[in-house]
Amino acid sequence: MTKPVRVVLFGDFTCPFSYVTEMALGTLAGELPVEVEHRALELYPVPHPLPFDAADERVRAAAPLAAELGLTLRAPAVLPRTRKAHEAALFAREKGVEPAMREAIYRAYFGDGLDIGRIDVLVQLAVGVGLDATESRVVLDVDRYTEAVLADAELARRAGIASTPTMVVGTGADARVVTGALPLAELREILSEP
Image (cartoon, rainbow, N blue to C red; front, side, top):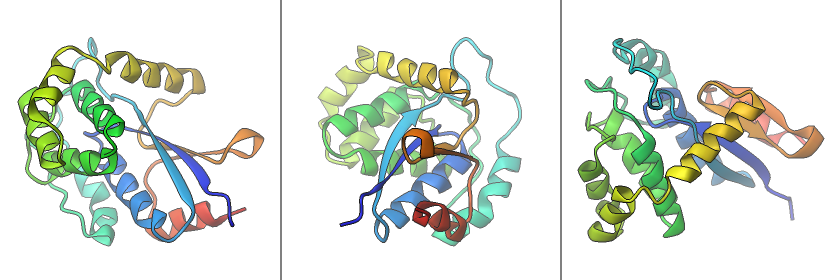
């Protein structure tokens, strides 16, 4: 039996390249032995100001990769803070539904243009993947996973990772850092290399 390739993916829910990379990894996990660990890397954490530019350019650049995967990718009108979205994903991990929650957050943002920085929106998404509304709201209200999100950011800083998506493929001395989104065939090749 082939040992799975470990991939640590640093991403943010407002990054269209993180979205297509996560969905591509999910697609390839069905055909290759891949084990993906998601790490939060907020692009605009407090107190950094949110940029005034729209995501149009980034969305246009990611569109060919999204089309390859059959993903809807629209430029949202709002650019939210994403700490709560990352916290919601960690709660979903604890409950065994992280992949569904992560996909729901991305689709809500890039498909429906919802403000994924809002707790009420995240609670709706949590309910949609089978989580309890009251428990989800309480977990987000009391910042249960804030320290874990901040720890991921500190790990990224210590590793010199400053952009999303960034993947660390493999472990130990053989680990490779891959920055940016790749076409499915290139990603498949990287994950298939010994």
